[in-house]
Image (cartoon, rainbow, N blue to C red; front, side, top):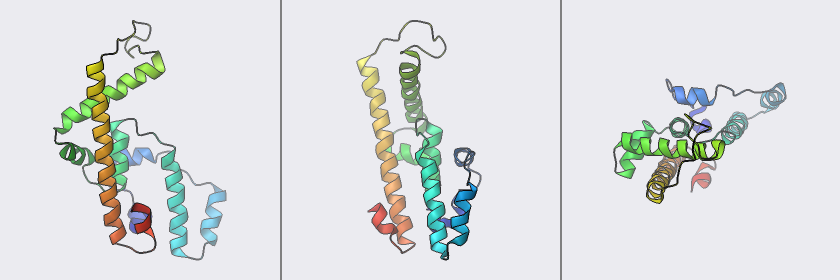
Length: 168
């Protein structure tokens, strides 16, 4: 994406993407190799690698981060597209996803107690609720994969130089 879109790789007016890169920095040790690289493609590749390294440290454990990554790939209105692929209303799918993430956080961070009452009773596990919400996560993951794959193929078609092998 960075090599194809270069300095315009970040979608304009997308706060989720901007937030994702709020803490992105290049050190002086990273700047000198950029300055010394003779080829423009080589410089963009170095920047791309640094951006990829930064993104690998991020978690996609909320709906905003998922939207940011897809927007970074050039998918407009990511949650609208995810819901379209899932065949269900965006608000309902997003809410199921958020509830699953919230419950996951309750389990991991508070021994299955809700954030509003961390010292309270343990929340019982309901199999039907769990299957429903795990299904939502699976649906979101599959839709994201497909949207990213299609967008990768579109980007590969606009350039040469090995990008096609990455997304195939």
